[in-house]
Image (tube, helix red, strand yellow):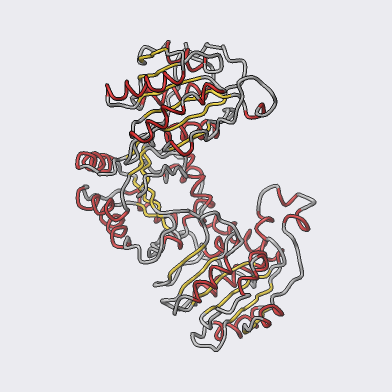
Length: 554
């Protein structure tokens, strides 16, 4: 029988799955759920050492003897501090010591409760990785707990071996041992830094076993060199390749996959679910794709991670492939079997039913005209929030380099980033930005480095329009003034004061009049085109567009 603590069950099951079965235990009540669960499972070899300082060094001796990771487990409070010497020794000797410290819930920190000290990151400078497990009350917290434990275990040998630390808060009651079996847990594995031939063979055979294969391409820099590999995998191996503009790879016929996932029926959606997902690059904009893959019964998800970092965007990752993207994709092309399946055809058929927006004067129509007329070999900087989401609805012209601050998805520096790029590049640099993002960062134009290659398209709909599209939020009485921050501000005076050519459009006719000037490659000064639209009309046009796509897929 095991403890009823779900975090304990995840930890015990994952240690067993990763082959960490030698545990050095120091007595205590707070760690008794851990002690009981380890000792009563015959797959673990347990050693009891009362003195925590000695227990840590005892564990180092076991590591030296068996040449495998070993865990040491103690109760909360100063018991944790007594492990410090052995953790430091493991760090400098590069020994895989897994430190497990029981803790009290954080609410009791500083409340004069017994055996309570700040334990989070207590060994930060002398461990390879440190995690704090959540108190599990729902599925998302259980996924988080599982991922954190996997991360800590994988970091024991992340190219360089060393100690890692798992701090596990446990709330009372502590002494319920009524769980008969450990749960089925997800194991995340990682290829070695050396990327051995036997590992390559394993990926080759597993890749060949699946017919429904998908590659997700996240944000990548321009000239990433992956276009040809992705094209071969798509055309000769039948792989579904989903990429957004930020991937800086040529778009295929499935570029409207985000809209398709909104419009498709549940029955067709089930047929579109992959068996194997390979992800690479950085952030993915499409929230619908994330939700779709998080709910899909995926057999395997490999994430290509040059640094070995554990990234689990879709909550399904099973393998971290420590390699650069080019090397791994070339390996698949060279070694895997070429075959076709109807999986890619299903995706192409579903996406082909989706059309780009054709609307009346609105943010949608403005972005449509903007995206379709971008000059080749220019640069597109995308503001966050509504700007980047609208841009995804249109096919990008060829030879356009795309950038956006998607590291944290904030609105606070899009204008400054575009200004910095244009100041350091000869390329024509376009920025698509919304009004809140622009005014928040308007000091991005307050410098002496502005160049005449900068073009700013400012969609001014008098507030944060995206907040009106979030279900439930449109019912809030605080929405207009305090959340969407409605305003009546124009960029005209500020732009002109900064020596920028200012243009404005209130309707389709004025927009058509100014676009030729806006796209002119040679001007004596930067250009800002401010387009004023109605938030209500914008929302109606968006609703009508998505409604029409559902009709297309019936």
